[in-house]
Image (cartoon, rainbow, N blue to C red):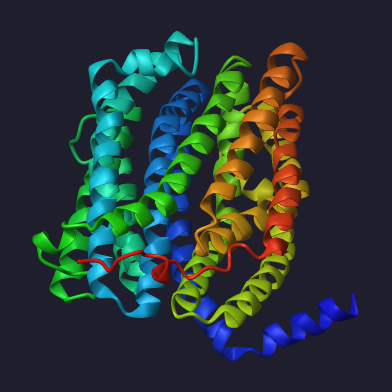
Length: 464
């Protein structure tokens, strides 16, 4: 305990570390917070149309959830290399990482857009048997899916900007596009200012428009300000065998990780969707509220990956190891504050929804479950997404995440929800046991120090 206190004091006195962490973590967290606010407003506006509509849109967005995680895997893997190359000041390699990441992200978006546009009702039937939810969700999904390619481009460029330490512009752009999204939600969901009342589909129109604006603005900033990642089209291509080998070895496990984890957590929805619209509405609202807290740790894990990646790429192993310990201490302190915040505001936010007392009660209990498991979940964010991935230990991250979801989370969801027929908050508590498992395995791996690697010197030949 004495050593922990001394380490905490040492971390708080390290102004260089704190300045680096805050400079990256706060803008990323703020950007995530703004996106969460949009989701919250979306859910509140759509919530006025009834619990079936909430459930329909919530389930339809599971398609975007899996897609976004796949793209997140692409840009996370790319960001690992880009951050280390930035530490080495190798801009040619960063441009090629950007090019390869863009191609994979856009290809992934088409894999989701095409089947969704061809048969949206069939896609919705994967998640629910409710004909009302299928009809509403299909109308929403057909429009929302068109935004996926724009999201792929924006997300890739934002990740590259973070890798080179430019995090302010994406926040400003997100702020503007969020205002556009909320305004268009109000117009198209309810039919104001002479527009047709499109209901749930109106929210999808707003999302598509906002994503197009966001993508355009990010490209204008990158190339208009001559950002370090700005380059000619031909500089995005032309890869040596060593580069391809390193990219695949580092990025593909992350891509597989996020996709398999996302697919697994989406399968939870198959169990929830068969527990009834009220259960889906409760977990959808609870998840939206939880995201307000989670964004803090998304920012912290992003800062961890970038800062440790920069240090490892520069060959400063001792400093990287010290900074990793500092991030864990910072994560624990922020977790304590987040637990108190979530507990304190839960009823204030729940009260903003027009839902039945039974659904409100279940939302509250789901949030209490989340608070109990929060120390484990937030440690996993910083350790898996930040520390282990920063040094390219991505295969182990793949094992930790996928084994937790597929061997613990999914069996618990179906066993608790469909066999034992427990309430949604009990099933959620059973599912969250995966976070305890991941924390134990992840900590053991962190202590082995196999993540302390400089990936830029592992290339067998230089990038041409």
